[in-house]
Length: 99
Image (cartoon, rainbow, N blue to C red; front, side, top):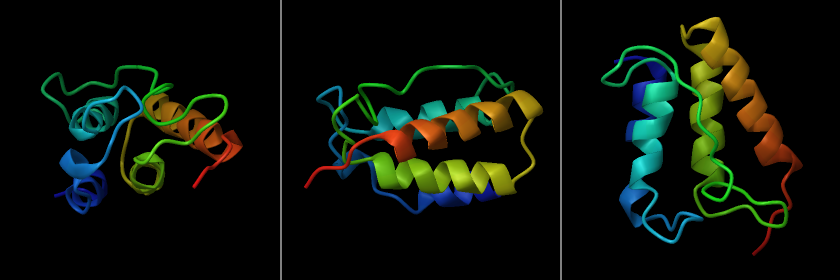
């Protein structure tokens, strides 16, 4: 198992409230897909705005998503996926946290 998969497995995505109003379970699949480990086995680009952050709030899955992004950067991912994870971290870090 690679670093990305191990980091995703550490978190209880189903119990986290996503910014879209549902469980954050779908975020694990998206993060795997972007890392090139999903069913398509190639990086794809999606926006996690309103799922992980918005201009005024960080949603509950933000710390878990940030840890997966860091794991992806330490893992062997495609250059385009690496750039996406760096952009994702920038969005999370630039977001405004709330209680």
